[in-house]
Length: 102
Image (cartoon, rainbow, N blue to C red; front, side, top):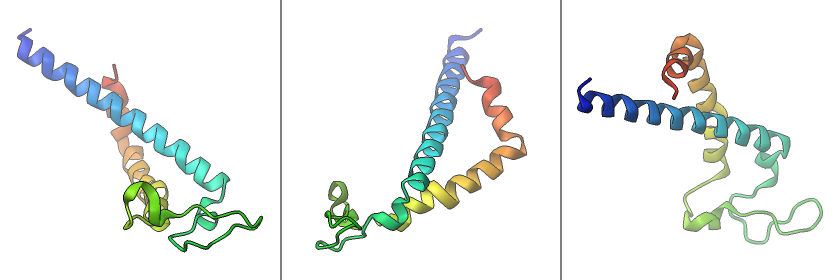
């Protein structure tokens, strides 16, 4: 086989592996988000917010220097967006991805 084609196939399989791994990681993060009820425990940026135990609540306003990031955006990725991707995968695309997984 022409090395150019072989390299393309190898890189496609590698990218597919990364995609599958990323989806699995997002599923695990969603499960953690839900299990820890982070949507109700993380504050969007109120500096003096405290949790039920009186400890400072995590603050998205200071998250990695990204003041625009909110818990709703994180929740959307781990919730509605992941669900939409999974619905697409159920239509045969998951099978397609796993067929070429290295």
